[in-house]
Length: 302
Image 1 (cartoon, rainbow, N blue to C red):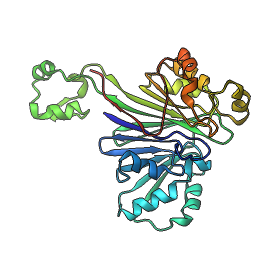
Image 2: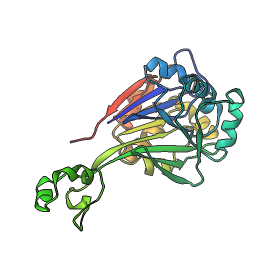
Image 3: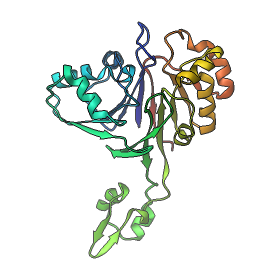
C-alpha cells in the first residue's frame, strides 16, 4: 500500500491558494519527498502528515521553486531532535547546492547522505522500493522519477508441503530468502508463482514531452505530470521555456497507458485549470486537474 499526496500544484511562485509543486509518498513507515519549494512545510502540516518519517528527498532540478523550502525543512527536522540519516538525491551539483542553502541551517543533529545522479537513467534501491531517475528536457539539467514496489508471486502451499519444507521457513521464502535444511537448499521459485503486478508512480515537471517520460511512465498506476498551461495560445511559450501544456501531458499519459494522470505545476496566471479539462479528457479520460492536498491510497490488485 502506498499513500500519495500532491502537497502543492503551483509553478514559479506560491500563491495564497496554491503551494509550489511537491509530492510526498508514504510506504511501510518510510516517506519520500520529491521537490521541496517554498511552503512545502506548511503544505505537509495542512495535510496532517509528519516530517519525521521523511528519509529521502529527491530533486528534479535546482530552480528556486523546487528547492527553496529545503533549509527550513532541515531546521524543522533538526528541532524535532531527529538523529536518523537523511538521503538526498538529485542532478549533478547536489552537494554544492545543498551546502549553499545550508548557510542558514549549518548545524543539524543528523547526517546527510548525497546520491548524485550521474547517468541519463539511474536506479536507487532502498526501503523496500525502487526509485528511478530519468533525464527530461528543460532549460537546465532536470530529471523525472518513478517509484516502484514489486510484488512476488502467490505462495503455493501445496508445493511447499510436497517439498517437505517446514512451515516455520515459509515466511523466509515468501520474502525472497533462501533456506538450507540438512544440506537441501530451498529457493523462492520453488514455492512462489509468477510475479504479480506491483505498484508504480511516475512524476515529472519542468520539461517538454520526451520519449524518456513516455517509456518510464509506461503502465504507472499514477502519473503526476506538469501542466504549465491550459490555454491554447500558450503553446509557443511552452516550447520557448521548455514546459508542457495540458494537452501534451494528456497525450503522454495516453501513450504510456497509465491508470490516472494528475496535472500539476500550473502557471501563476492559470487560475482555473478545471475550465480546460473537457478537451483534455477527450485525449485521456482519466485526467485530473489536481488541487493542493490531493491524495490517493494505492493498493495491490488482487
